[in-house]
Amino acid sequence: MIRAKVILLILVLSVSFAQVTSEHLYYGASSLGMAGSDVACQGGAWAIFNNPAGLAGQERNSVVLGSESLYGLSYFKHTLAGFQIGLPFVGTIGISVEDFSTDYKSRSLAHETATGFYQGITLQADRNSTLFFGYGIRLQMVDYGQSAGPSGDGSDGRDLGSHQAVGLDVGLLASLRERIRFGAKVTNINHPQLGEANAAVDLPRRIQIGMAYSPYDLVWTTAALSRSMEYPTQIHAGMDYEILPSLHLRAGVQSNPNRFGAGFSLKWEILHIDYGFLTHPVLPLTQQLSLEIQWL
Image 1 (cartoon, rainbow, N blue to C red):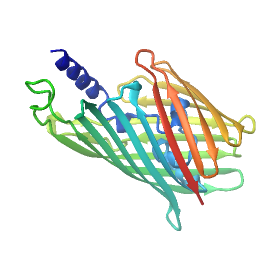
Image 2 (image 1 turned 30 degrees about the horizontal axis):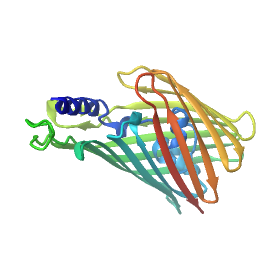
Image 3 (image 1 turned 180 degrees about the horizontal axis):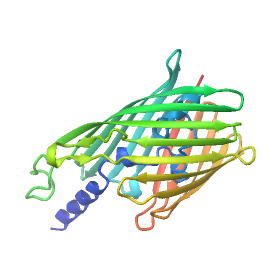
Image 4 (image 1 turned 90 degrees about the horizontal axis):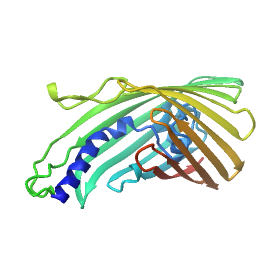
């Protein structure tokens, strides 16, 4: 009976976290530590996830990897990878892969993957300002796993099926005199749905707008608003401070719910290692470790 209750709890939570690859705001440990306030930051290949317009301003090619257990729960694993490369006459393109799984005792109760293609394009650039546009096309697939079944452990459960959908993301990024940046991103602007007919579920459409300002050399402050349809508007704010060329410290806050994040980045040659955490008023904190390798 206790085992069945545990599985039921995990299933309920997995439904609550369903479609995480559409709704997740914190891609990369730097974004997590800044509480999702970085929509106006370029951020290397992490721009694939945070604002595809930022790809257009990249001077280096890069590969990124990240891993986290949401809210410190080992059975809610989120891993992601991406790379971006500049190509003649095309601009900068990127590829992303995400995997989110809900597991219990080596059994998959739900599994979600997303694969995306992204492109960043320079619309305008001069000595004092730039304007970038970016878009992403993302194939999202959800496997709902098996029901608990009579035994309660899923071994004799019923297959709950799977669905897929294609989402379209768009973003803009503008800079003024290299100290002020404005960013905006719309996730799932095409209103994709998982499922069929009356059982279809809308993938969340999210709008993010924000700015980044560098009041002094080596310091960036960020602020953003984000809104998912049918949910309250969230306010995000953060800061990145370059203490040394090889060390950055970060912090951030957000509302609805009130959360606090912090983290750091270590850089050595072409390798960047980032760590970040984000608290929650009820659930345990989420921690993420991410890597980035850059080259010309």
